[in-house]
Image (cartoon, rainbow, N blue to C red; front, side, top):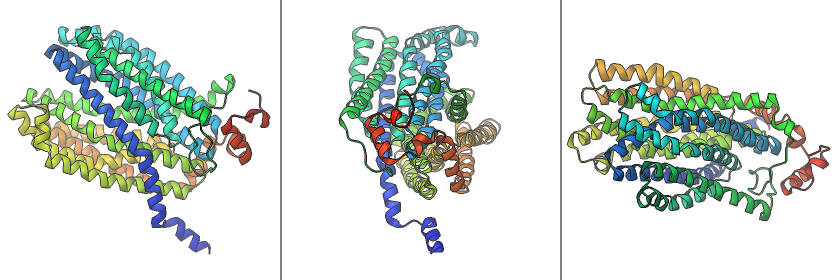
Length: 508
């Protein structure tokens, strides 16, 4: 009997696999759509900058690259630290941990935005000190100064998105992003062209759009909290209507809990930044090649291509993080393992679509951006290499989500560092400059980094002791066991917001 049970746990049935696949797609599809909407919104920015003039386009491009490196990557990475805690907390029904994690993360991101904002405000003297073009620097500085409020918007948006995603509630994220993006184009045209604000108008339109997205999300949360009924089953993520239990001020500033959040947030931030910065590193190297104009133009097309293809891995990574965290928090290690295996399998399948797209559509895709023959020729050579990179990137990114869901972001940061900077970067320099392969050599360096990364991270994932991770999750989010292991009737009352703390013997 025991052997049959173990066999069942080791080899899930096809209905179980299909059910897990359905759950992952249900979480991931809206996230992929939201990422695609974000990609289109960024394209709108670039197009509008191009319409303003070549100087504005150059300055705007410098500003976007700088804000991505110094600000958005940091905010996004730090926010990912809450994924482990929230997904496992919702799995174990520990509403207090989820609520406090959301609030602590918002405070952490707002504090992190202060030094970032100061850097953005003083961009012009910083760029002039490293001999950047004064005219381009002035335009970039204007963009950065007017984009500072966007740090506040992102400090609120990222935690709320992760909080809702950790419940498995992702469709509102897509709809709020879509509706705000519909307003984004007319707002950008009004500010940049009608009111003649130029590049500052584009920056203002960006943070207005993000605040609109935040407003729509808050409206959704308020509406569902007051109208929706709670879910009956503890085997599924919490309903969107679940209120935030009102924590005490002493709980919010608990030093031990802050240490836990920071130990997860800092490695997550490092992992994200290391990967984002590598593409900027490749762009810088392209400027030192024998044909810098062609290489830099091709580099811009490559970055746009990888950004578009990254929408699917991002969605799968988020889905894997949520499902693995929920199941570990609920004390179901075999289902957490199943969620990881299904997510990686789906990643391998979808990565082939990226490869086919870059091979079959490389010429047509290049013409979307340029008519330059030299740039088009180089683009048709490197895009298939980027497609092969996607075969490794998609399962690698998905596996990073599994590590976040199991509260192990530090492993992902370590793997990213040695893969991209100890393997990829030296090989890119040797191939590009010593062997004189030019930009093609840089792309082969990226391929080597992705291969090293995916082999390492898949080895870690498939050697995971899921029983041990389940016990770690219990320790991580089960410290307030009054929430995690309370009677089911009391849990339902908590979702309804009816005197939970009083029934448990706590004061508000």
